[in-house]
Image 1: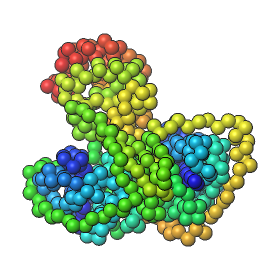
Image 2: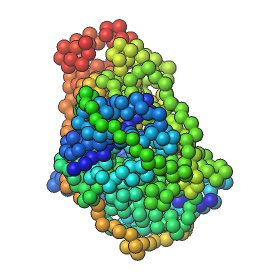
Image 3: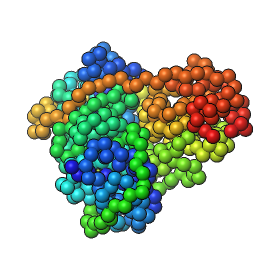
Image 4: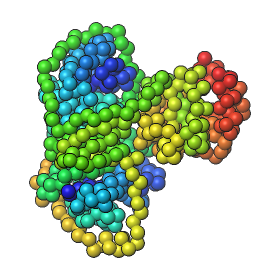
Length: 308
Length: 250
């Protein structure tokens, strides 16, 4: 069997979630090809060639793919599709955006957010915000799949795959990029961080999120937030952890002033170790926390920072 | 400009789902149902476009058994002008749904189709993108801002690193994210008025669409329960446990 894996990147670095998606492809089993579509993205290609378990890297380096517009990328992937039985992307904003378009163009279903592989046509995925787990069998000849990276351990990067440049340019010409407003941060990405500290409504305002900075610096952590904190306008939405935000599974997750609504738990309950700091001993977050501390966060945070 | 808003009837988001004892699916018997929250945001956005004089007509459409007319009436009460119910008792994949919606798009020729980015039951996040592919339209998914001007729609999207703005040729597909707007409540007079607004019923089987299932649901199980841990008394205890017991910090 042949598997095509779409590489998530920003034209400069390969996102570490792709290594986990390759692990999902290995669980399916078959000859794995990576596709790098972007513009001036040679450094991504260099990274991709080192991904273990990959035999070939296809490169489509063209201005038409600079912003990975769904209209253009889906045409490119569809052109390549006939050589593969499985087409896989990571369930991040790029993959989620263009993959259903690929599926529809190929006239096949898509299986979204796969967290485990049972066989080459049967996959496990969460439904109802993770409150139920479905096992689904695809009846189509081509399987179009998005993978939730937290379900897999990333492969190593000491491989040496063959690189092949594609000269296909698929520009649908119906959409164009206007601008990006990206959050600039020295901290690791939420999706890639091994430690995350998140604040909720208990933080009371956006300024108080600074209390998390010192701890995050000491632990090399990313900073997240609950939907309540985002809805209240404390912090931007790209910090949101939960069913409607980012799904994370770090080694250590510290929830500060977060009550533990179902929709937040859906985004973080697969973390290895969960710590909850909340002054309400009845908060549902304590039901999932390995270590809980019932305390006012305004006392607990400075003390924790000083003792790390 | 006509705006089409496909909506879905789903379990109310406040209701805790239970898995059936035979693991065949979740148990929806006697549960409270509602319009999918993302679809509600889509309806609201369409109505705001009409109030701003950009849209001339807002059409809500839903696919399912008779009961989804309830959600269509909700959309009408919120301000949609008319509704289309595509009736079927089949359980459909997103691709089937997108193909049915494609037929409605061909009939109604809307300039803008606004959908929720995902439904909170199947969590697929597919229908809008599939409909865009089938109709050859551009798409602006996970929208937090929608501006129509000069034959284009500018959509600001919630992406992993922040926000991205795209310009799409019309007609186009938009899927909504949570921060696009805050949906209004339907007033009692509007709920009464909605009962008299037109609601056309079509049978899915009349639309000449292949509705064969593309996937089989083999089983549904409850998620692994996480065990509650311990309450520590002091920050010193916490740091000690994290270092020596959990070994997640050094």
